[in-house]
Length: 297
Image 1 (cartoon, one colour):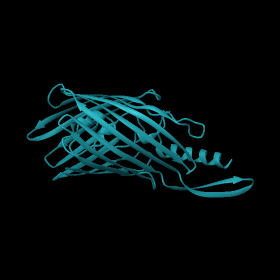
Image 2 (cartoon, helix red, strand yellow; image 1 turned 135 degrees about the horizontal axis):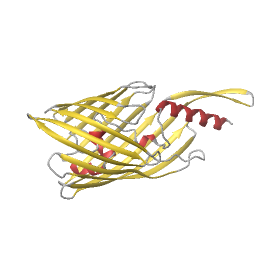
Image 3 (tube, one colour; image 1 turned 120 degrees about the horizontal axis):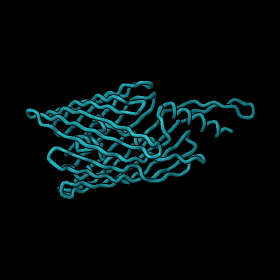
Image 4 (tube, helix red, strand yellow; image 1 turned 90 degrees about the vertical axis):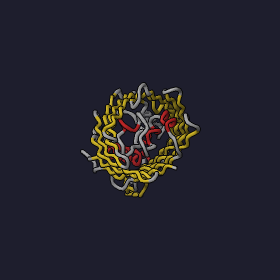
């Protein structure tokens, strides 16, 4: 009875915290986001932002120097979320990225009755960790790549499950400044969690972006559409970025989702160091603040 109560309460807690619709689990596979809208960063390479390789491994082939990239966010209660990526180019047409992403939902006090005795215990509600390794290669304006992902999830410091998945990504540059992409994400399997298997958010994504030059500056327009297979749900998004020599401003908007609809961000680059911030207004949950730090060398 004790374990049953803990699992039920924590299932309700995580569902309320994320307030997501749909049937898929393993949110750690979809949660990593940057201070640049997904519609821009996952279709083409963005200066000082390595996070796109998590969603489109073919972008590894666009790296022209080594890079360390850290991202984090503050939003729901006392939870903690962050990730670290390292990218390494090989020659002029291929590259590798490795990284780790971690989520901790914070401590909660659970109370239950067992044999007519009231008991309580403070536990970490949920702790997830995701590891990735990506490789990408250019083949004459056509970029291909693959990512191997491994994740673990622990609830109430009691029960855990593991998941393994791959991403297959491609990007195409038919003309200068125009990028098109096709990506299959989170294709894999997971172990059972308390005799219940969480479905991976397997999806197919199409995207496109175009960079216009305006008096020495850049205006980046992007669109991306993901179809989450198990949920039979499309989640389109659009992005707009204005780029100068040392800074950029960006806006993003997502459709057919309940939270994190609007994205407002800014980035600044100084001598190989890239700093980013984004504000995501909440509808039902608190506002989210994202932070990124990158170092190119």
